Image 1 (cartoon, rainbow, N blue to C red):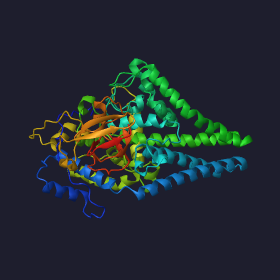
Image 2: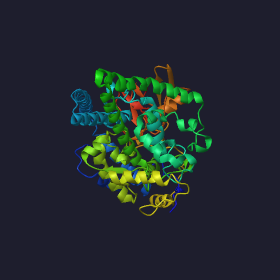
Image 3: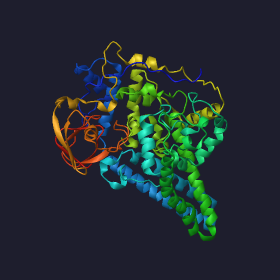
Image 4: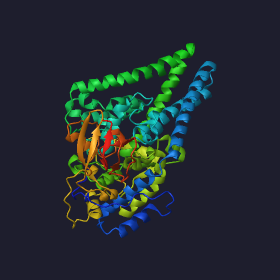
Length: 535
């Protein structure tokens, strides 16, 4: 069957859905799904809508695991950082020693150790820290707002192209610029052009230089450097050339010192053995790039993962956003060591559903997510690494030819039918034009809708009377402030600021803050009392 984009016709579910109570303590022994069933039966205000039930169970899982995040996770990430540092030090010592005394075995082990440290830095530490998974530590070295990873990609570039754009717009053609990274035709839903004829070589080059290309990805280089007929589809108009030049300057400031360190300074320390150390460092980086390419491409480009038209995903409610993440993302099966070396992107589905939960918790969450999907008849894409990667390579090859027809391993999944199964079409819904970040949790039921409180923005020296039913971001914009934000869903953490005093309610999790100083996402937090914000 020919590759196509699946139509979504059913409306959004109600945003006035009442969710379950705040997550129970960790001593709760019932399964998450059993708790969800009991709460659904006990709350007569919840209509029998399957999409709402699906959303409820995923929300409950998120709140339950978020309530467990704490000291165990702090200990874990600090051990990982120490392990990465030891691997890097050991790898460099082995490379130097092997070059001086010419020991091929030690040289290979050194290259592997150095590459492993780079992979851990990129995936298990950098990628996850920049998602805000460890912001609860209030440690500047592990905080998404201040962390700068030891790769050539500027953290700010990555957070925008990955956290803001890709995670919110996953597999939406023209909005998710990660689809083939602008140069590889990975699905028949993309129009073929002559440059796709040699995309096997393009993909090979991308694999070898993945991090440098990722560093320029936020600049939308393909739209500037390729002829108009070869450019990837984009809903937003191409920015001016000054945009790309600024991105290149920021990349150069980050990349030049690191390139000098790895390929000039360290090899120079070896004196006459300069070339040996240089080649070893290049080999380690090549292995790292190939691994990153392999894992990331397996996450969204295997058979049966769907691509969407922009108009199909406008004004998505939270339940439909969850569903799109699952249908556009796939997992990779392997050992615990394999999961670790992928930065737990082996559980890509769980990562897209819950990007700010510490990644090492994804394997446990996957058990429940898979049960929830099975309960609602939603496909859950997963498979061994070799099978998934070979499938990606096959797609790169077959879609290099025009008019390629795509053969699925199972019956094509009909998105419209899925919504017919999950939606209660007899129910009138008046909220299909609202955005997902406006969802209210059960705790919000006790907040008078029209109650007004005062928000003080300290740095701007502005005060606003705000409703407890509106986000702090909306209140700031109402008085002309322009805070940084990205997704407006609480996914990317771009809008995170410091609250000095007052209580707020996280509308995604239903968790009420304390009165003290802490970081909050202003796009999904509403004030419960007078609050003071550093903005």
